[in-house]
View 1 (tube, rainbow, N blue to C red):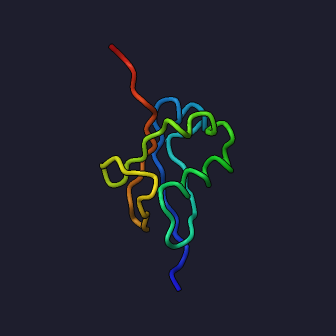
View 2: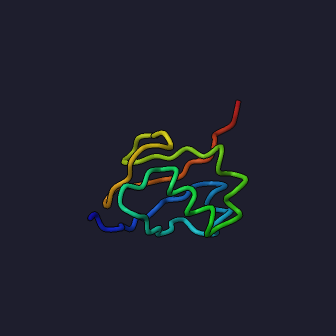
Length: 85
């Protein structure tokens, strides 16, 4: 059976402000996907809830879908939407 693993998640802009940190560690079960990471973070940090639906998840420098599988050693970042004009 696969072991749970820990990821370090980099936070940017409004996500960093909401959580009060530039990076957090999250322990996930084997077979976890990006959606599981977001759910775990929202459970630990309710301030993330309103931002959750609009966040992009980047894994190893590529934006991925919520179903993307995660693995130990992945570089993960949460990116809020970018506005401007």
